[in-house]
Length: 426
Image (cartoon, rainbow, N blue to C red; front, side, top):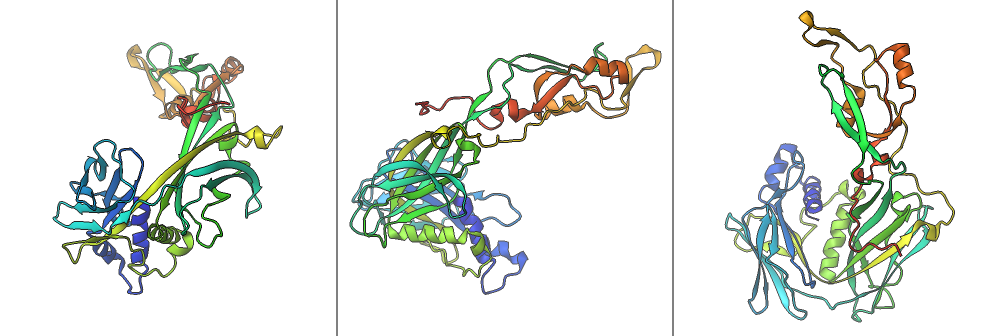
């Protein structure tokens, strides 16, 4: 969320009614602290991220180092956060926040500015009661699988939720080959010339597991409903041609039950991050959080201290559960067969004066060797026409092997061969 907030601040400040010259934008942003403090009731090590707003020329937020960060309950008891990596502050082991208590966030930066949040309470715990997948047509007439959430009844007042998901899926490389590149030799003077050989693989790389995490803001609310629970709320939609569902798919849905103030903040953040809002007339200060500076009139701070109760549920399904006897979605890349030559067209070598090795005629490298070293090619098979081509045309342009793009035979390009601990095939 930190990067999203930083980028949105830039959009907001550069689209104010008061026109800003481009060279002054960085000056306006200077000193703005960005706080990502989303804390739940989970028994775990909690993390808070601090950064500074960054200019359009920078590629990523600037971490805020050396700060003192604490959460303080209504009795004055502190939970301290230690800097683990630049800008990342975590508790020293698991920490549990108690329902019914009020908490606030306190930050003291190295420049002596103290920031405090408004007090927040942990909302009542609401469990995810159901998680399922259904074949549906979405609003764009796209066939696919909808991931749907139901919740238990919450408090009789409106309940507000933020969702995240983490999906894991099986990857099966379409070309399974037990051989891999072995010796790759660019030495022209060792008696063999340029050389590439293959050998049996040490490990199989035809089955892997890929993982994606949600990167958008998913909000839900029972406000305006006749029930205090959610029913059939869509957290994720996967088109039928999405490779992630080709074999076996799992999704872990994470639910954060937070209050109406947090819901309002994240709704604004979501609205500001949409393409339409980026080009709209956003007023500076529209994205107000619940954190302010205590001892400075000029220090700006953006972000939110969110407390939430947490619930999660995991789901598995196979492609054939919804599309029996139908072709699988296309693979993650196009898998054309190639035959890169060992020596480029027109390549010649001549003996060096006085018999001291050879001289290369030209400066081109080997298309095959360069492609292997760049991670582009996977061995597919020996080229049966290789020797006949050399006898006919010479070494230049001769290809000893047939190859595929690396990811077509080696799925570690897209995932890991390590089976996740939670994975089941049932």
